[in-house]
Amino acid sequence: MRTSTARRLLATAALLPVLALAACGSDPKIAGAAGPAGPAATATEDVVSGLTRSEAAAALLPEDVRRAGTLKFGSAVGSPPTAFHADQAGGKPAGIDVDFTDAVARLLGLTVQREEAAFETILPALDSGKYDVGTGNFGVTTARLKTIDFVTYIDDGQGFAVKKDNTAIQPVTDLLQLCGLTIGTGAGTTFETTLNSRRNACSDAGRKPYEVKAFSESGALLTSLQQGRVDVEMSTINGLRHQAAQEASGTRFLGEFHRLDVGFALKKGSELAPALQAAVNQLIKDGTYERILRKWGVAESAIKESQISPPEHG
Image (cartoon, rainbow, N blue to C red):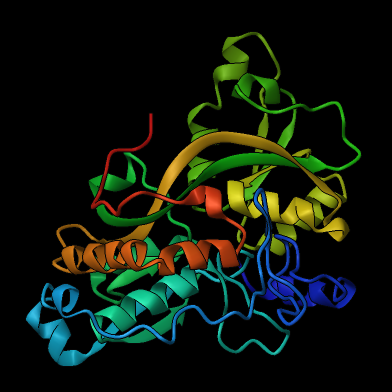
């Protein structure tokens, strides 16, 4: 979920309908994201602008937010289908997070004030008040719940990918399968935390430990995988599946490792949570929710209802 390097990679892969996980660019006029349920209609489909204010949801807003009329979002932008720039010129990003952010804001009668930020800087900035809400495919984990509240809107999680011609590595169900390998992942992510927390598993089993390399830009991560500097990539299920669907990425999705709820991130105890939850549940009820997921080819990530800070999936 990163930005600048990806735009440079676009020049070598401009033919793709939606660029691979490494890149943050695409030609959304061509096609939407591909998913397990098949390709979506088009990445330019407008599923948000027709929404109008929900008085029931807006009534739950804190009075100061209602008066201000805006919500400050800190947003990590970098990889389709979550959030990415649709062309080299930048401009407004597109993706799952963007559509849900805009849809919820419309239902609450608020204006989105979006600032793009590095993934690893967003959660700390919530406590300082720099942002009201954070987006970046933030997974709900036990560790994060100690300091952050979440309002869930999709179910995604952790997965692995390798180069397409690497047939030696099969679906990863246990980190011991990674012993002796170099794993690339995003800096400050749940993936990095998961890998580092089990770093001793291989040596405890009498095997060579795996090495973890963390990248601040998704473009650099994919390039390292393609060039053999890392053996395996760990990232989001939806992102890796989307990436593997792009022939130019040259990658193979190894499957799901651990599912996680994904939500809007908030300062612990934020009074915004009930209003955001009501807005997401309204989207589920009126069918907009399903249209957003199908637009981006991630129908399998649907949740039945939004929750506030649920426990991490077992």
